[in-house]
Image (cartoon, rainbow over all chains, first blue to last red; front, side):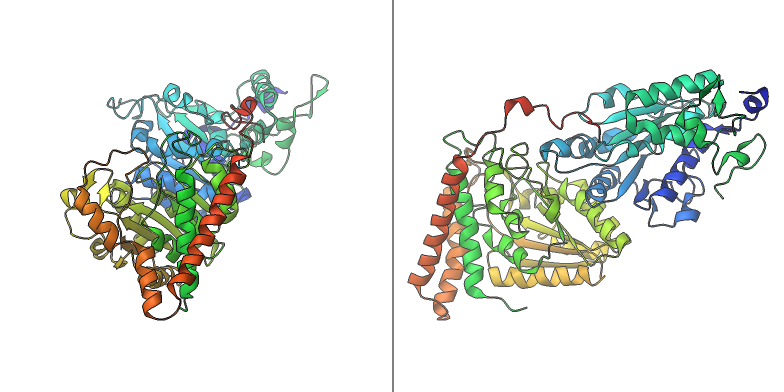
Length: 263
Length: 319
C-alpha cells in the first residue's frame, strides 16, 4: 500500500457512514424499509438517514408517530410479510417502551415457530454520551449492549468508528433469520477515518470474514468507501475480497475532499 | 354475500368439537401450561372463514384456535402443535398459544395487545407491494385498553392501511369486567375518533357477524382504510383451563350461556326456517365430534420432539 492510498482516506462522521450504508442497502434491495421517529424529513436526529426520504420516498422511509411499541411490532409484521425492515429507536434508552416486541416477538418467534418463520429485521439505535460533547441526561445516554445481549437470537452489533457504522446499516443482511440490534455508539460525533492503517483494516476484515461467511456484505459496505488501492497485490499476496471490491464502481469518488456519490 | 347455512353450522360445530377434543389433553398433562379455549365464540371464527383469502394475514391472540382454523391452517397440524408434538405446525415449539403458519400468513401471540402491531406491519407490506390483501388483527376487550390499540388504529388510519381490527368483546379481561375499566359502553364507537369504519355486532349471531366481517374486509380491501369491528360474545369457560372462575356469578354464567350460545341459537334458527331438521343437525354435530375424536387419537400417537433438538432455533444460525 503506497503512502498515497493511505492519505486518500475520506473523513466522514459515523452517522454519515450509517446513512451511506443504509442507502447502499436500499439501492440493492427494494425490500429494505426504514421506519422510526424523525428518520425521514429530518434525516435522523444524528443525520444517520440523511437524504434517504428524497431518494426512496415515504413508503420506504417512514416517519412514524411516537408509538415505539407499535412500530417495532410493525417491523415484526413487515419482516414476516417478506420485507426487510430497519426500525429506528432514536436513543437506546427508549428501548424499554418497545422491549415487549423485541423480546417476545422479534427474538422468540423464530424459535416458537420451530424455525419456520424468519425474522430479517434490524433495530437501529444510538446510545452513549449523546449530545455533541454537551453531555446528555441519564435517560438519553445509556449503553444497553449488555441488556440486549441476553435476549435469544439477536446479535447486538455495536459500531463505534465510521467504518463500522457504515456496516451497521446492513447488519440484517447477515442471514435471513437473524434479527439484529445495530447500535451506533456516538462519541461527540467525532469524525473518523473510514480506514485506518492498511494492516488494521486487513486484520479487521480477516476477523470478520473468519467469524462467519455471511459477514462479507458488512465488510464490502465499509470498504466501498475506501480509496482505490495502489495495487491488488499486497505484500505479494492477493488482497482480501473486501479490498478488491473497492476497485469497482466507487473508488474514484472516495478520495479526500471529493464529494461521495453512488452515481 | 351468499352464505350456506348448513355449512355455517357445520363449521361452528367442527370448531367446538376441535376445542372439546383439546380439553381432554389438560387433565392428562398432555398439554402443559395454559389452554385457552374459544368455546362460545365459534360464530366469530366461522364468520372469518367466509371472507378471508389465502393471501390475507391474520394475527391472533392467546385464544387463537378458531382463527387459525378460519385461516385454513390444517386442523391436524394445529392439534398436534397444541399437544406439543413433533408433527405440529411448529414442531411442538410453539404450543397452543403460538401457532405460526407462514404459508398462510397466520400468526398469534400470547401477549395481550401485541397482535395489532404485527398485523399493522402486514397491512403496511400489502399496501407497499400493491397487493389486494387485508391484515386482520384480533384482540379482546382487554387488549382494546392497551396502548397499542390506539397507536395502531391511529397509524393505520393516518396511512390508510388495509387493517381490520376485530375485537372479540367477551366482557372479561381474565377477571376484570369490561364495564368496570372502560370509559365508553362499546369499543366500536372509538372508530369515530380515528375517522375510520366502525361497527358493533352480535358475535353470537353467525349470520350477522359473517355479514359485518365481510363488510369490514371489503372496506379495507377496497382501499377504504382500516375497519374496526367489535363482536360481542361471552367466554363460556374460565380464562384458561383450571381457572377457578369465581369472579363471575353462577347465575350470570348460566344465563349468558343460554342466551349467547351461537351453536344452539343457530340450530333453532335453521329448524325454524325449515332448512334442516333437528336430527340432521345433530348428525352433523355428531360427525364433527367423531372427526375430532379420531384426530385426537391420531395425534396422541405422534412422537414428541427429540430432546436433542431443544436448543434448535434459539441462537442465530448460519443461513
